[in-house]
Amino acid sequence: MSSSLKSKLALGYRYLAKKIWRPAPTHLSIEVTKRCNAKCSFCDYWKEEVPEVEIDYIRLLKLVKPLVISLTGGEPLMKKNLKEIVANFRKNDPTVYIFMITNGALLTYQKALELYQAGLNQISISLDYIGEKHDQHRGIPGLYHKIISLLPELTEIGFDLIAFNTVIMDDNLDDIPKIIELAQKNKIQVSFSSYSDMKNNNQNLWIKPENRTRMLDLIEFIKKTKKDNKNLIKSSNYYLDNIPDYFIGKDILGCPAGLFWILVTPDGKIKRCAEMEAVCEADDYNLKTFKKTDCIRCWYSCRGEAQCPINFDRLKDLV
Image (cartoon, rainbow, N blue to C red; front, side, top):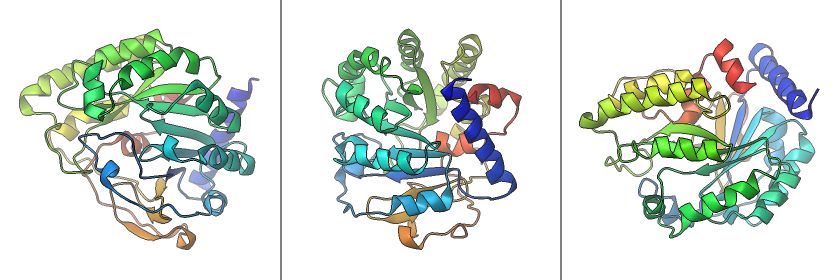
């Protein structure tokens, strides 16, 4: 039995144990910094000055016993001791799945190798457009070329998964098939999310009524591509099927923020998710801190995939 399969089986057992015996978040999301070298139009993080304090991540690790830890920002690669944070998590939990979401501008082969050796399982690179359009959207000249030039080296390191994180929005519907093609060429995956204006109230990227038919056609294209190409589209059919309803304003109930996952801010606070207010200090968090939420404002993948029923099709995706 391969080590990768053993790890998946161990995580599967832990998931069932949480569901049956010990209800607790399965996902610990950590903003290691709010600092960012990008100037994205849909996010104001790069304008914020948030202090970074020393946080007892291991207390949270032992309390929550998450299946997954995501390292985000801002731009996580701006955190100087990121490698040490990863290594400390891995030392204290050999099984937990650790991944990082990055814009890719500061990523190099050497940095990726060091993070892999420290215990990082997955790198997800944000990519929403093809060519200079992506550079302009992120405010980083040459970013697109940097990403695609680095991919062949990254895939040789040995990560469990390398993926593009792509947000579906009004002005990139024509770019997404090309992003999928790029992922297929480089033997990596694509994970989709849906645009929300919660970060800075920018409604310009919300899918307009005149583009809804194109959006529906795109969703069908993604689902067909997923069916025809194993290990290319990471998103579940459940998540994809609910995207049209979200963009026409239909309420999608059942957000598990705070119950399925919690977020730790760089200044040591706990939130349900990145878009909500902090409720307590990290040292004060316990498994009874959060009750159910009634928020319906986003259809981010973190929310939608958390709500995805565990059925045969989803198990095939995960295994």
